[in-house]
Length: 385
Image (cartoon, rainbow, N blue to C red; front, side):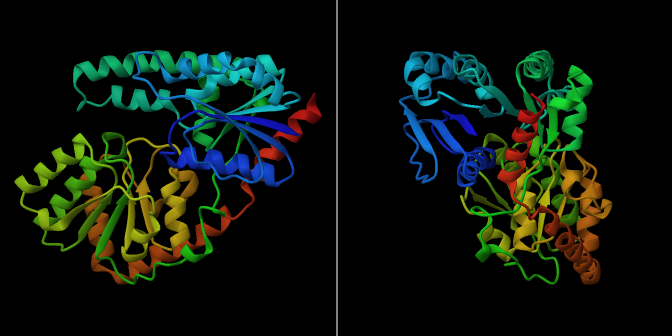
């Protein structure tokens, strides 16, 4: 098969971005002819696929990136038609590249394989219902619900295959759009090379809980205020746990630092800043916590399972599809519950070791060939035509 992809972002900033590039390279390694239309500013060293570099600098978002990307493709229409001739599928992940994907589908007479990376409707609805959100933000969330529902309708009509990471994303999308289940599939994330290197497997050997780790964006969506507040509660109970947060500085991070200082537990919390390598932190911590208010399918949980560090996470989005045991899950936005759970794990090394063994059991089901799953869905679709 010939597969054409699009990645016009100027940086690989997220796990989703990295995953997409790895998938395209993986499909090429499996013998498919893969063309990636990419931003020329990216330093991509990929041996198995063809890169079509386009000069593009991100502009201020007066015009959405999705529209800017489509305009760029129109500008290079002839070159794209030549290089992309004979494409069977256009592979697009996320709504930012969706209009560009539909344009490529048209000019290359190909089929569109679209992957839903996040349930933006449910995310906006979650914060719209939150009593903690100010009125002006609720207006934004209300408008986002309308916008993303419209996007979903377009995706359901224009995509030939739609992939989801979890059963809940699949069900939510289908309930809102009524899209035919025969054009939908679920492809979960995996633990595999090149990101999950053998040298980082089971590098954690903790036997008790002293240091808690968070890795990700320092934002409201990730439940950071509730995680910090859980440590305030632990401080009041004289439970000497330490929390290390790894992520880019943000306005919320500064706000949380002030909250910590006001409540007198600055010695319990460290903000480590951003790191491109999560495994160096997972090696020396004792527990990875993912306290999201909303999340789809966080790769950091798979990274934790690979490293061998015990993981607990909030019961939202696709997280229960990864950590199926209720003991590893906790309710979102509940500082007291999280504090109780961490205290239990701290005071009982035997309970801690049980959680460790539970996580080790789940790791094995994520060892599979991820690009093969995507290739299989394309082959099944071609057979139906």
